[in-house]
Image (cartoon, rainbow, N blue to C red; front, side, top):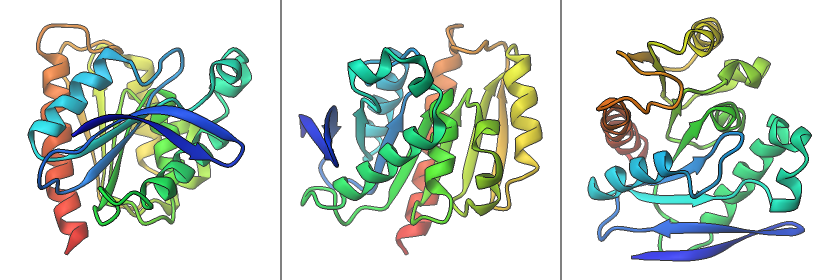
Length: 211
C-alpha cells in the first residue's frame, strides 16, 4: 500500500509519502538534507529497497515551501528534529503502522536531525547517509538506538566530521565508508551499497527492538 499523506503537526500540515508492504516488520521515517525534499531520488531509491525487504517507509517534507525559502530554517537542526519527533508521534496514531518499531534514515543535515530526535527516545535504529551528525552536538551522547554512519570515501570533510562525532556516541555504532563515493553517492554502485547497508541494519536492529 502506498499513499500520499498529510502529516498533521501542531500548526502545520506537511506532505508525505507512506508505503506499507504487506506484513511490514518496521517503519523507517526519512529525514532529507538541505536543498532536498521527500522527492529526493536518492532517498526514494533507498526507500524502495527497504520496501522490498518488508519495511514500511515514510518520506515527508520537514519544512513547508515558505519555511524552506529561509536558509536559517534549513540548518536549524533543533527545528528539524522537532518535526521528526512530532512525525513519529503522528505515525503512532495510524492504524497501519502504529505497532511497528520505528527507525530513522537521515541524509546530510537530516542525519543530525535524526540523531537529535533519537536521543533518549524510543527509536529502534538510525542510519545516516553523508550526515552532518556533528551538528547534533551534545545530543549524541544520549542516543541509544543502534546507529550506522555511511560516508563516501571521497567526501573528506563529512568523513572527518563523522569520525570526530562518532567518539561522542555511547550506543552501538559503526562507520561504513563506501569506496569511491562522493557526497551524493552518484558513482555507479555506490547508492546501491548504501541501500543494502541500510536494509541490513534496519532488518536486524528493528527486529531486536521489537523483541
